[in-house]
Amino acid sequence: MRVKRHTDSVGLNSARRRNGEIMGKFNRRRFLKGALNGGVITVGLPLLDVFLNENGSALANGAPIPMRFGTWSWGLGMSESIFVPKKTGPDFDLPEEIAALAPIQKHINLYTNFHVFKDDAPNLCHHSGWVVLRSGIAPMTSENRPGETIDVSIARQIGNATRFRSLSATATGDMRDSFSYEGGNSVNVPEWSPLRFYQRLFGEDFQDPNADSFTPDPRVMVRKSALSAVQDDAKKLEKSLGSADRARLDQYFTGLRDLERRFDLQLTKPDPRAACIVSAAPEDLPTGLDADLVSKRHRMMTDLMLMAVACDQTRVFNMFYASAFSATTKPGYDKPHHTATHEEAVDSELGYQPNVSWYTRRAMEEWAYYVGALASFREGDGSLLDNALIYCTTDQSFAKTHAIDGIPMFSAGTAGGRVKTGLHIDGAGSPGCRLGYTAQRLMGLEIESWGDKSNTTSGEIGEILV
Image 1: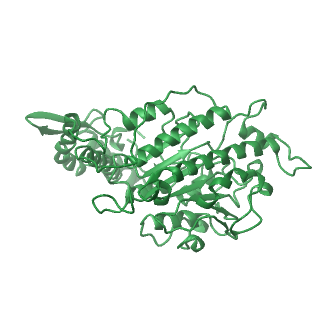
Image 2 (image 1 turned 120 degrees about the vertical axis):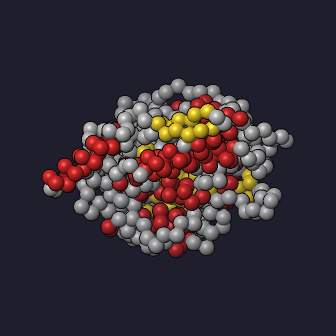
Image 3 (image 1 turned 135 degrees about the vertical axis):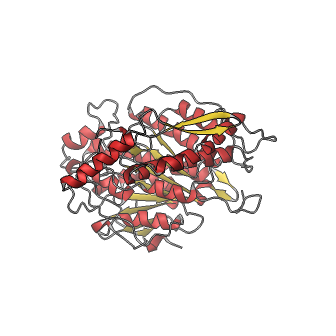
């Protein structure tokens, strides 16, 4: 049996005896059982320790237009001398590395000189920065994902009334590239194929909110009943388990209850959504990380994601343009992005790495596309962006030296009119977690502080608040 390590042999032997007794009752093939319409329903168990040996301003019904929260990420930071504006506040200048943001400048805020603190943890290359900004906690190893990411916390607050509590997509074509997790071993895998993403969103389980008729899917009814049928068996099992397994089983059934909640939604006719216009299925794309291909994939995934939001399939969504170890390639250049950050010399006349900067400029072009798409998507008397807050981060400030001080961040959207935009904010060395804390408060989380050790903050970024 796998047991917690104890400092005394008595505690260890006691734990072994307890797990041994439980194993006498259960095995890996144990299922929860229940009855449904005279038949037997079974639901498999997770891997427990006992199995191991180690439209206007409101909707038509008077309800307010729902608030949305999104994240966007790019890899490998910036070239500070041509990225950070000289002017703070409104009407800030756009140095050449962020010149592509001119069309969306009024919709965004740029945050610079905010720091990530590692405290007693190591500076883990391309890992520490994004983990702290997404979870508030410095990781101890490159495999470590402490806490949970900001999108998960917010999804629990605002994501329970939609078919998908949250959605993630990546432009890299690699399902391993995710900046979202519920715990160390529970990474939210992003959609990587435009065609697969379309089928998931608008396939046979999609309920068109603007359809004249509504017929509940009998398969959904059976699935929902199946989950309900095993609840009594689950309660009996829980009494026989140790504390660690009870916690794991509770997490498992939290997921099942979330499934049942989504089944309830699929059995209820959705409210009409004027902005929900589903297009034909897209073409699928070949694999590869050529910058033009990544851009095309990003834009297709963005358009699908925003349609899912407009159709109220989700209210929390993540878009990953590039991974922390970005391997995007440039036509005619022999080094992918990450390799270039370490091997390309800083040009003595320009003062920065020209090819590395090219990659960053492409990322900013895609950030501009993403925000512009949200801003142009009409909803009620405004846009989808008016009723959203987008949280945008990267993993390093200067990737060549793996620097995590002064990591740039962005936000986009006004969160229903509660956020000022068009500002450049200098953080004066304060924790970068202040933006995540502010976002969570805006999304309705009643938290007094957020972050761990030096990253802890209870100070909102007041300059952006209306």
